[in-house]
Image (cartoon, rainbow, N blue to C red; front, side):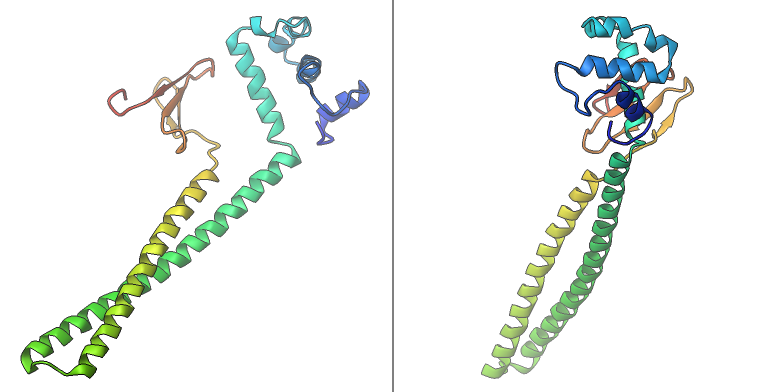
Length: 213
C-alpha cells in the first residue's frame, strides 16, 4: 500500500487511508481485484463487498492470495527484508566457515598434545619415574589438553547454533522439481513435510513420513 506503485495510486484516487482494519479490509481487497483486471476474480467483487467472502470457492481464494503475495514481494519493503536476510545469511555462513577452520586447527593441536602425552608415558615406563618436575610438566600438558577440548566443545555448539540461524533465514522461491503430471514438489526445512502442488495450483497435499511417500 505504501510502495507508491499501481495499488498506491488506486488508493490515492479513491482517497483511502493507507491502513487496513478488520472492518474495512473488504473494500481494500475489492480495490485490489479491480486493479488486477482479472475477469475470473473480478466477478467475485460484489460477493466480497456484501460481506460473503467465505462463500467464494477455495481455488479462487487461493488465486487471490497468490496475486496478493506476488504483488507484495515486488514492493521495496519486502525486497529490503529479503535483502537483509540474504546479507545476514552470508555473515552467518562466513562465521561458520571461520569457526570450522579454527575448530580444525584445535583438533590438530589436540592430536599433537595427545601424541606427546603418549610418548611421555612411554618414556616413563622405559626410564622410570622422572621426578617432580616431570610430573608438573605432564600435569600442565593435561590441563592444556582439557582446556582445548572444552573450547572445541563450545565451538561445536556455536556451529550448531549458526546452522539453526542460517536455516531460519533460508528462502525457497522455486520447487524441488515436478513429476510427469507436472505436480510441483516443495520442501521447507522448518516444516519437515514434503508438499505437493497440482499443476493448476488448485490443490495442495503433503507427505508426513517416508512410509507415506
